[in-house]
Amino acid sequence: MAKFKAATDREFYGKEYLTQTGKNEWAYFSKSRPGITVTVSSIGVPKYMASLKNWTPKMERAAERGVQKAVKYLLKETLVVTPELTGILKKSGATFVKKAGKETIGVVYFNDHICPYAIYVHEDLTKYHKPPTMAKFLQKTQWRLRGELSLIIRQEIEKVRP
Image (tube, rainbow, N blue to C red; front, side, top):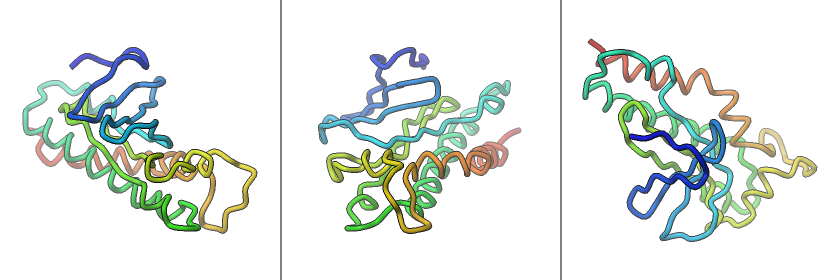
């Protein structure tokens, strides 16, 4: 699988696709739900794990499972700190995983089709949020859990590593 080089390079997965928007940033889009999906966080196999030699098909499937578990965990933890007034923002949270062995990428996102104001709640640092909720809820949670997310993926790979 070729690496993405620019925001115009897209990896299609049915009616959904991922677009690389920066060095470690990905955006998720859906043809069936038009509109830009905002507040996206991506997770992939750690570089030191991907650089291992002798990858087996079992290890590739384990990497895919690990990324799937990591994005589900990130979404669960993010929902704890997601601001809630009507509950629509929390309901718009979802995950998507593009399975590609050691190059698997998963994203956690809040869909603007369901919750058009998701980006404003996430980005506006001037608004008060009742603790433990906060602005930058997805970004801060991923930063706080980055070690745990890598560990989840690594543990899945280590289970099947020869």
